Image 1 (cartoon, helix red, strand yellow):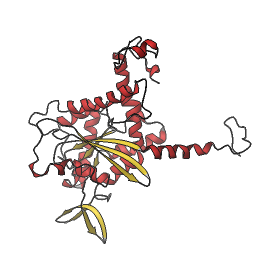
Image 2 (tube, helix red, strand yellow):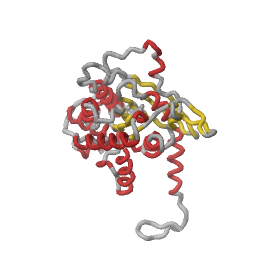
Image 3 (cartoon, one colour):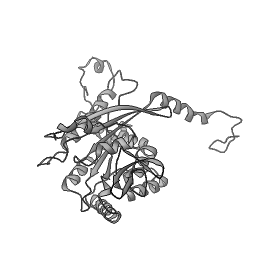
Image 4 (tube, one colour):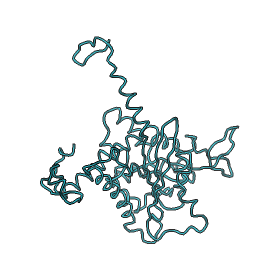
Length: 334
């Protein structure tokens, strides 16, 4: 017998517990979107790391340009989408690359094109959302996660790193990673990680998972462990080597193979489990409920809010926010 909240006993099986299976079937049919942006100076192995994460050539940006590769004069935005499937689950993965970031002599405001791109995706989604005849499923191009690659200097963050994360941490989920961490000894790596965490704290930069969005104590305890381990010190590789009779992804050096997925060698496995196996859905929810919601509230406030649907609304010119009538409060968003 099942029990009701008030203490009464249900007289038989109803089948409420099947709702999870119903949701699973619907979601499996619809598939998932996940949009990940990679930012950092060239030469930090960004494309390689993303290819390693998803075990496929999802970021072809570096190889596509071949030997005639020339650094762009300004920051460019390049989005490539792939559908990847595993165990009957389809995911449309979009990798957004930002070649040219941090590679100029003067890198002042080089975060602006990235911030513009992120906002443009929110705007696209908002325009679809306020249409009278809305699509059943609005295409989601919003950036769910921004992997920010920190150069393994072993000293401290550059001013550029601080500026970028300061400006963008309020509009997108930033996950900082230390690239090519095999260039540092374990002690240097740990010292550098502590220094980076301290600098981010001093500058008031909140990276994902943000403390203020922990749902409950269980969430907080799990996320505290992750926050203490960040930024993850990673090595990427799409080459396989034979180690003790097994094929492993790794980087071959004069003294042996650095195994990418071996937690004793680097924190790639931690990053992968965090991004894909435990927090992928949460990254999407924080994007929708916090970052996009903030953008949406700001835009609707600028336009005096949405007019209630009426005949005059339907015959009005097809602008994004016709006939402003009232100021939107936080409550009207829900």
